[in-house]
Image (tube, rainbow, N blue to C red; front, side, top):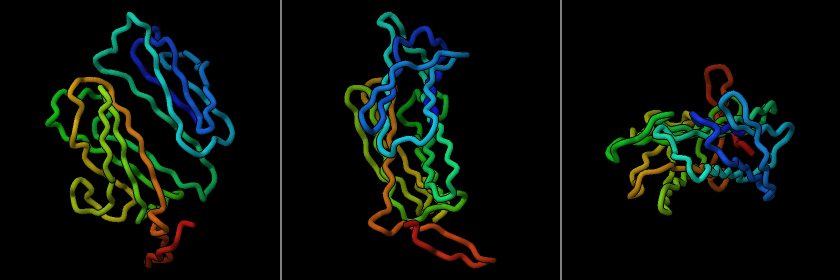
Length: 194
């Protein structure tokens, strides 16, 4: 697993810390080629990983902000992979009227997982928190294709002050209702993921 902080001027970063699900703090990131990053070889703990970025007191956060990317390489064909994204990658949202779409692709190998429960938690400036489900319904709000393994929803509320937001995604098997679609010839076969 690699956790990478991308910011225009890395000299503004005082510290970058990643905390694993067991509470272990990893504080000695590598600074190289405009990136601040951690690499965790081998198997990574399952659970919630968090990060903390501290800027020097005289540093001003750049107008384009910064991004933190997490890349996980998984070779096990049974691994369930969830990839989250938004429709505003590397852009600054200047108007709260802009529609922000948050999506999570949920697959086992190349096969979409359907019927899962996907919840999004967005945190922002001043203690702002918004929680909402991401759906794979195909009803166009904003998901346009049902049961393709892509769960999406709109962020409808914003903090009252400008700043940086963080997104957390929680995926469950929806009380045993999640499954994956397998194909045999031209016929789909629905099978449990457990």
